[in-house]
Image (spheres, rainbow, N blue to C red):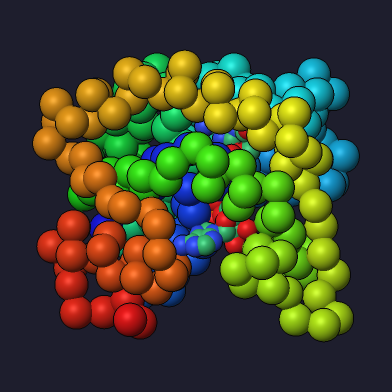
Length: 215
Ligand code: AP5
C-alpha cells in the first residue's frame, strides 16, 4: 500500500502517519523528519537550514533526491506512507516517475489523503507542539500533554513568525497539488478536527479500509 498524506502544517500529518503506519505495517517517510535528522547530524547545507528554520519550502530537487533514495530501501518493498511529500506539482510528477521506474517495479499510489483543519486551529496546534527528542512522539501542551521526564524539543519553525510563513507557503505552493490528485481520482479529503483516533477512523473509511483505527 502506498499512501500520501497532504495538508497544511499542523494538520496532524505526523500524528496520523504514526497511527496509519502501525495499522498497515508500512514505514513512515517524512521529508520534514529526514531534514531535521540531517540538521541534527550536521549534514544539512546551511542554505537549506536557514530556509527550514524560517518556515520556507526547500527547492524541489533537494527533497526529490531524498525520497528517490529512501523509497528503494528494502523496508519499502510492501509499501510506505509519505508524510509531507509531495508538496508541489513538480514533486508529484517526480514521484510518479520514481514509482513507474524499473527499480520501483511499476508501483502506484493507492490514496492521497488531505487533512482539513482551519487556520486558527493550525496556529494553535503548532505553537503548542513539543516533540520527545528520544522517541519522536508528538505532543501538544494542552490537548496531549507530554509525560513527566519526556525530553522535549520545540521546533525552530514553530515560532509564531515562522508558523505564519509556513501556512502562507502551503497555501501558495500547494494550491495546484490538490487539483492534480483530484484529476487522478486519488484525493480523499478528511476532516482533521477531533481526537486523533477519530481522525484515523475517518481516514480508514475514506480509503475504503474501515474496521480499525482504535476508536
Ligand atoms: P514538515 O516536518 O513536513 O512540517 P509541516 O508540513 O509544516 O507539518 P508539521 O510537521 O508542522 O505538522 P503535521 O501536519 O505533521 O502535524 P503534527 O502531527 O505534528 O516540514 C518542515 C519543513 O521541512 C518545511 O517547512 C520545509 O522547510 C521542509 N520540507 C519538508 N518537506 C518538504 C517538501 N516536500 N518540499 C520542500 N520543503 C520541505 O501535529 C501538530 C500538533 O497538533 C501537535 O502538537 C499534535 O499533538 C497536535 N495534533 C495533531 N492531531 C491532533 C488532533 N486530532 N487533535 C488535537 N491536536 C492534534
